[in-house]
Amino acid sequence: MARKQAKKKAVSIVTIDSYSGKSYLLKKDSLTPISKLTFKNNHYYGTYLANKDLIIAPIEVAAGVEEDDLDGLLEDRAYEELGLDPTQEYIIRHQEIESRDQYKRLFQLFVIEQNMFAEIFKPIREQIKYIDLITPAPLLYRSVYDMNVLESKGVHAFLYFTYHDTFVTFYKNGNYLYSKSIPFSLKQIYERYSEMVGETVDEKKFFKTLQKDGLKVLQSDFQQNLMKLFGEIFIAINDIIIYTKRAYDLETIDQMFIGSELGAIAGLDEYVQNYLGFHSVPLEFDFGISTEEWYTDQLQYMMAITAIDVMQDPSEHINFTLYPQPPTFFKRPAGQMTAMMIAGLLVAVSWPVYNYIVAKMNDIQTLKMEKENAVLSQEVNKYKQIIKLKTDEKDQVSATIKDISNRFVAKEKTLRSVYNKKVHYRLKSDQLTSFSNDLTDFDVQTNLIESDMDSYRITLISPSDKKITQLIKRISEKYYNDIKLVDIKMIEKDNNSTFYQGVLRVDLR
Image (cartoon, rainbow, N blue to C red; front, side, top):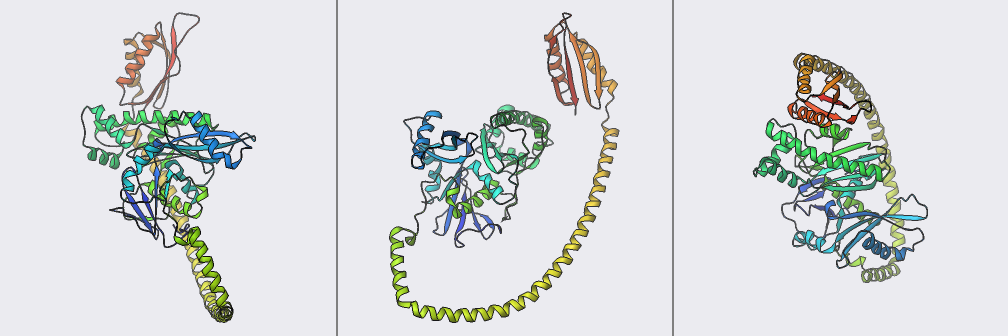
């Protein structure tokens, strides 16, 4: 937090999760849980709206629209283009984004039905009267760029699981691009798992196991069901990524961050690699804020940073709040007029005395600062030398550590390779014999079998495409625990015969 300071040092930030009811106090670079939420005049209260509760869509208008007419026009277009219910009241906020058409202006609209809005924040307002900031959850990621935690370059995807909502957010060059919720919140994952096993499992035990071991648990039944469930989750995420790349003309996703309010879920990085084809890292950012908890919801950190940004420049951020704290007396028009009158009277009465006192104080201050400057200059030179020595020592140690680490990694790779060959080596003859028996069972022939390490490509030939399909199903079920990929791009009929053929790819674990 040393890189950002609240505009008023006396103001402390209170972040609130309006869905779980948890709240935190940010004070002196420390984020502390609050057991009971109460209102204080010197606190600034901020919370967020979940992505699932918002309608988010771009709206295009003519470039020549007057600013005075803009809000009304965007509201009318929202009702027309987003299919809003004309009998309902909505809260609509917008921010301008880059347009590809020089004759058009493009705005990102954030919309929520007013009754839903009031219902979400009713529990909070029963405890405190005012809420200074209510911002869309996808916009919280702007804080990681404002704090220079991430470089504002390239396309980043953020996947975050909460108990009430799981959503994917995309940013391009540090700016919000698109976000989408999926029906797999932590609560929904727990409920779906209970359906899969046919009984209601203990919720606390389920989340404790998920939190501790993730997808790498030792309980085989738990792991198998969880893997099937997360397979569905990543199919949905892959569809979102495909849509986003197509809709926003993106060549690639440069980096993906994955996290949850429980903490990092072990094994998800392998799912991203297998299902999406690129590397991911945990969504755990260092904002320079300390906490007593072993893990704190990342949205709370980002909410605190966003609140400070809004206090410094409200015009740059979307704020849905309908319940802000009233300004202090001297910030109201009447208070400002009173202050001006008092100031004018004091200036007229005390101007001569003021000039004399200021001149004397300046002389005293100048003499004092000259003496301090001489002392401090010596201290500065002393510490510069110390810093240089420590920096040189640090560089030498870092170089040594890097060299040792490189040698360690190389030896580790060699040992793992030797171990895998000795312990996990599969006899290809046994595997090919097993595949041959499967081919015979379904009257499917082959004229070519290729293998590369644990990957096989088998050319399938059969008078019936149905038998090829049945064979693939048999292999998928029979070798479920031994394979990580079964794929056939196409089954096509040979124009010169009555046979169907296709190339089956089988990758072993």
